[in-house]
Amino acid sequence: MTWEGWAAIATILLVVVALWRGMGGPDTVLLGALFVFMSLGLFSPKLFPSTSQLISGFGNEGVVTIAILFVVAEGLRQTGAMGMIAAPMLGRPKTTLGAQARLLFPVAGLSAFLNNTPIVAMFIPVVRDWCRKTGLSPSKLFIPLSYAAIMGGSCTLIGTATNIFVRSMVEESKAMGQLENVSIGMFTITWIGVPATLIGIGYLLIFSGRLLPDHGSGIIDPADARRYTVEMLVEPGSSIDGRSIEQAGLRNLPGAYLAEIDRGGERLVAVGPEQVLHGHDRLIFAGLVESVVDLQRIRGLVPAADEVFKLSDPRPNRQLVEAVVSASSPIVGKSIREGGFRTNYNAVVIAVHRNGEHIADQKIGDIVVRAGDTLLIETHPRFVRNHRNSPDFFLVSAVADSTPVRHDRAWIAMAILAAMVILACFPEVGLLHAALGAAGLMVLTRCCTANDARGSINWRILLAMGAALGIGHTLDTTGAAGEMANALLGICEPLGARGLLAGVYLIAMGFNSMIGPVGSAAIVFPVAKAAALDGYGAAGPLEFMPFAITIMVAASASFATPISYQTNLMVYGAGGYRFSDYVRVGLPLNLLVMAVTVVLAPMKWPM
Image (cartoon, rainbow, N blue to C red):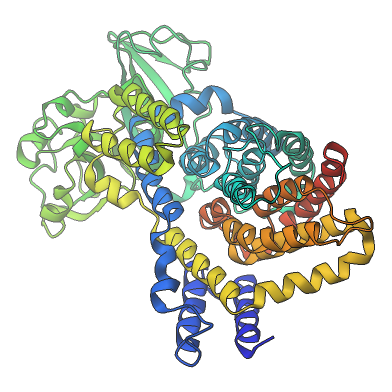
């Protein structure tokens, strides 16, 4: 092997060590490796890719598609559409095992017919909110979410782009007069994918709860947080009008409780879960600011403060702001209504915190303001900028992720999603084209704003993916990939046909852990084709069909590193994981899926 190949392998090993020890995020480490390869290219421009080739991964169709899908997911989140889809499916499980069972099977099923990357992109915010409501730890669910999507994608031809890529290489070989007996259809891989998925999900349900870290649910301890009194109104004719408190999802709220109901002047206290809600009911809650945000996302609940509907800015353009009243404020000693809060500040108080004191005996507008009260305000984001240094308030700060949900546009967002899925199934259109149209419609139909669309893109994930593609290209051009592949095949040759099949799987799995699925498939396919056709078997050339299926499974179903698949990278930060978490849970799963594939593929397609 040339020194260039050894340098490429050494750099990859450094990347693995850096990620394993948590010395930096995947984007930082992989961009560092890309810089190393660019620098080495100055000394060997023939073998190392040029700078333009190394950065071409950032314009890769898959990377661009994922960037656009973040916008589609943001539109679904802001309209509450994903919540409408997922809520009946996920429910409110009590245990991690129950939560995983409710999550993994539907995700795997959806990923078989939809590309698994958008499935994960759309479920990440749903699972995050779900964990806050149930008190479960997100770190117990995000890696299983990614793994289930990967395995589900291995069940059909369209489940993942890697399957389509391998099929395209088969078709190219057939055009050259090779592999004429190999034909891969929509459900060819299903014979291997479905058993592997069922066994893999079983493994996750049994072992992942003990192997994954527990970083908590993210719910703030009520003893350490401000508790607000807030009124919400049941909209007449809404989905919760006529339903019980439990049916409406208002029981066991994280960080909040329903203190009483005001029904036409009659106060109902100590309400039970069976209490039926009526339109125009005023529900008085006591809870944390995060709980107030959650309440505003419940379809059928709106702030009870009448002034909310008199603000000049449309609700989708507003957010929640916390403001601490100073002693010099002109509203001190007056009720919120008497102080003309909306008129003077173009903002509406929807909740009040006063040193833990329960002040729910009066409506929000009738509360007399005291110095030191913390007001939760609904207003335009410019309120923070205009009043940050105002003598009327000690402190003004925006509440993160508190834009009111556009419930009236949920069905529009769902229709856009359905259209995207249908169009993506047509090869003439493709996922990128369909996703770009869907993202544009999300903005045009005001399911999300242009600013929100730009802010929804996770650039760290995209940088890591683009850099990983450049690194994979370097392993190919320096000859490191081919040398490692040939060495392993030489070891496996004496083990017979099934041993050779296992060797191909191990090669694809190893490269996938370093350079991702498409690069892995591109490197391993020609090596496997040569091994099968050039007489590695004991009785001459081998049938290539088991090898093609093996490459499809191995190049996609790799779980042992965060960079082995884009969905693993997508949940890396969301779950607060370390590199070692993927190895601990994913490596046994890799070997389990490998065993299923190596055993079943030759049984279905004799070699």
